[in-house]
Structures are given as structure tokens and as C-alpha cells.
Length: 560
Image (cartoon, rainbow, N blue to C red; front, side, top):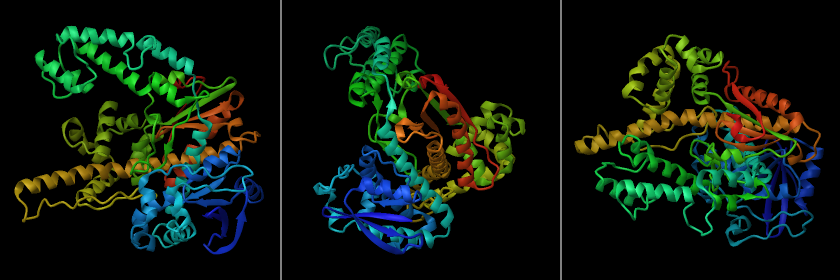
């Protein structure tokens, strides 16, 4: 059963829709938090339908009401509008609308409209007038989405994808609400050890950075050099007789000069200062918690993004400041070799599935005789998934193709489709954007134009080759987190989210659960069981395994 939440002026209506998509009644709601809580007690499987989880759910969490299930129209619209499974639906064929703009924006600003016992529920800003004037007809959009799924060529897969995507939106809001436990004191100590004491003047370099700058200036004979500036640094290197085409660390490492070592150290520390220094600490750590704004589906493959704080790029050094509360533990789990395992399961390549069954997939590939070393197995698999056709990876590819023909054929087919400008899809039905059709054989173009078009096609083919793997891995991760969330709710008698084990961090193939110490072992078992659940949800009965590396720690940096 669904309740579709719509607004008109200051009036909130919950429209009841049955599983078949029939409207069966309306309720005027004075207090949304109380209504949701009461309804879920009576009917726990109720699914709340709204235009955007990020706009509705935070205020419910503030009112200490946790939603069991939802249907996020913004996220689901983006999937259904583009999926090859729904290309014949009315939703896919209708002209562009405000729903498309909302979906493409990637994230809607939260609407501050729901407070406990608040009879005046909605105070819209100008940007939200679309909800009042009918440009976002929430009920009509929901019914259109239900029709698109029902008439699709893969209804079951799409239903699983939409459920997982919507569950991910709930999890993102809950993780932001709960926050990742963070010690500002420990963070300051890390910065002080690495950089020196915090400068008293805003914008000044810490003493260790300043010392490195002076050393670099001396070794390059450039007394006023600001090495933070790529243009200035390239000029100073050139004057010193060092030929560099960029200031990227990987290129600088190839150069021989006394200034290179301190320059690389400066770049490392400057990156720390810029990305996670004291300004970051002041801005992002509040009341001992880091609360990034996650954007589910923020990447075209379905991977998450963030709108600030760099949550998906936390360096290992800074993770030492991520500390569990007293009496609590972190359960940290990451999926080992996820993408090649995803490829094996997608392709139904029994040989590759078997290679990973014993634990280390790359060692299994070596044991099969396909290649002669683990390093070669990893290199060959990365080449297969990312389209490296030259060098050592290219040399190993024929051997990999002979050993695992179904897996390699799948990514090769995706690459050829991309080169032709065609769309490819993940296991559950998220489809790639269309590419430009190759004009490599267009006689009306010059040889140079045909060559450029051919290279463009190859580049897009590399994208589509990886899209199916990375996108399906994102689907598996969503199903994994959704299963973890469901299992954690049954693990503790605590009535509220942050009093019980709860997810606090997610990074593509890694999760962190904050749990009371006495429950940590049970949480680890549930997280492992959830990985198996995710495999069955995405791939059915294919006997693919998704082993985890799991650690129970007080500090995030001690997990690996």
C-alpha cells in the first residue's frame, strides 16, 4: 500500500493507492510526523511516495520518526525516463518536464516544512511554487511511473532497482542525520603533527609547509616562488632546466632533481591542508559529527556523490580522527574485488565465478592457468573492465578471453555498442546516455574528421564497457545497504535510530556501522549476511560470492 504525499497551499494530502495503482481514498493531514508514525504502527509495509526524499525525510527524522519504506519519484523518474526496459512507455516518450529538470539537478534543496505538531505544514520559498501550481503533479507522476514499470520488458528487475534506489535515499538522509563520529581534538593533533601548529593568521602557511617552500625556493633558485601555483611552478622548473609538462605528482616522480623530493612532500601536505585542514574541520565537524550531504544517484552510473565535505575522498591519515563513541564500536566492511565479481555474475561466467569462490579472485585466475601471477591477473581484469588494449594489459587479454569467454564477451559487446552510439544497461536496468554515432566510415567527411570520430567512438566504448560493471556494482551496493538497514532494525530493542546500530558511512563498496560494543559481533554477522542477500537480489540463483573484509575497531583508520 502506498500513501502519496501532495501539497496545495498550506494543505497536505495523503492519497492512498493500492498495489495495482488504483486510488482508494484521501486523507487531509494536520501533523505529518504523527500520521506517519501512527500509520506505520498499524501497517509497517506502507510505502511513502514523495517528490524527493531529501526534501521530506530530514524533518521527519528531526521529529524522531523513521520511515520504513519510500518511493522517491525524483530518483525513479531519472531511471525510468532513460531505461531501455521502459523505452516504449508513455513516461519515456512524453516531452521534457519539470520532473526531468528535477532529476537532472541531482539533488533538491531540503524543504523546511514539517515540524512536530505543526498545523501550518508548508512555508514554500519561491523555488517551490512548482509544487503548488501543478507543474509537479506528484500523484500523476507516481501513476505514470507505476504504468511504466508494469508495461516494461523487465518488470521484476526494475522494481528491485527502484526499491533499492529509494532505500538508498532514506539511508543517505539517515546517515547525514546520525553523522559520522569525529574527534575534533584528534583531527587537530593529526594536523599539528603533519603541518605544525595552526597558524594564528588566516591564510598563512603552517611552519612545516613554510619550511618546505623555503627549501624548494632555494633548490630551484626561485626566491619568490609560490609552489601552490602550477604556472609559477612549471616556470621555475623550466628555468632550472627541468622539463615537465604538468605539476601532477605522478609526472614529477619521474624527474631527477634535488627539489623533487621536497616538492612532492609539499604537494602531499598542501593537499591535506586544502582538503581536510583546519578550515574544513571548522566547517564540517559540529557536535562531534561529520554530516556530509550525500547525493544518491549523483553519478551517471548510479554511484553516489556528495555536495561538499569530500566524504567520498577521506584520506587514510584523517580517518584517525573518526572515533567511535565510548562504549560503541565501528563495524567496517568492504567488498573484496567487487567489480570483477560483478562482471562474472552478470555474464554468468561459471569459470570466473568459480575462480572467486575460494576467496581471492585473482589467485583463482592464476590457479586456473589463465595467467601466471596475481599481478598479471589484476592487470588483465582492469584492462578488460576499463578498455586498456595496449601494453602488458593488452598482451594478457587474449589469455583472459580464452579462459573466461562469457565475461570478456560481455564487456567487449558493451564497448562495441558504445562505439556505435548505442545505449547499454546494468543488470537491473539503469541505462547509459546515448553516445555520438561513429562517422568513421562516412565518405562525406575528411580522413582527419573520420579519425577524430573513430577516436570519439572508442572513448565512448571505454565508458560503456565500464558503465555496465560499475553501474551494476552500484546496484549491488544499494541492495547490500538496504539489507543491512533492514537487519539492523531487528537487532536491537532500542526505539530510536541513533540508540541502536546504524549506518554512518558509505564509500562505493565499503560501509561503516556505529554499534554498541556488545552488539558489534552480531552486526558483523548481519553485514556479511546482507552481502549474500544483495547477490541474490541482483543476480538470482547464480552462485556468485561477494566476500567481505570486516573489522571491529574504535578508530576508522585501524580497519585496514
